Image (cartoon, rainbow, N blue to C red; front, side, top):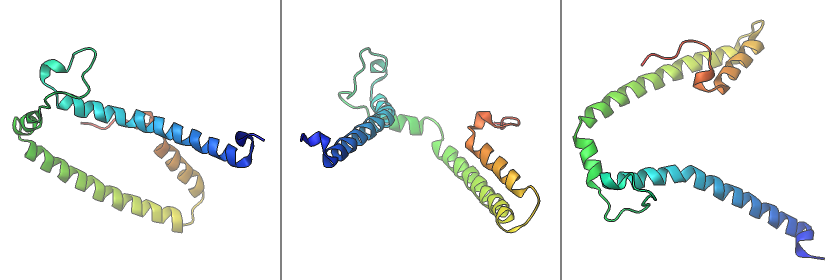
Length: 135
């Protein structure tokens, strides 16, 4: 009997197929990151060349220094950290109170409300009802 018709052979084929799909998915996910890194290391005139140069020669590491020093990046980073910390603390507190209410309190319609909350969490931000957040 051929190897691929045995149980062990079929398991090996399925495992190889799973690894092939995972490898393809990994390539799809990592390709944009490699593209960004490659573009960040290029000279300005190399960015729009067709066909693209994947590994620039020589790499321009001063592009990063220019991006960090041309604007007050440290101030922007501190402002972002403050906003992130405030939003994280607020989310943790409000979600803790809501979770306690759903877990411990008895109320009519609680299960329906919980399902509606879960349904809105599963929607992307643009699909949720209500006004968009102001920026």
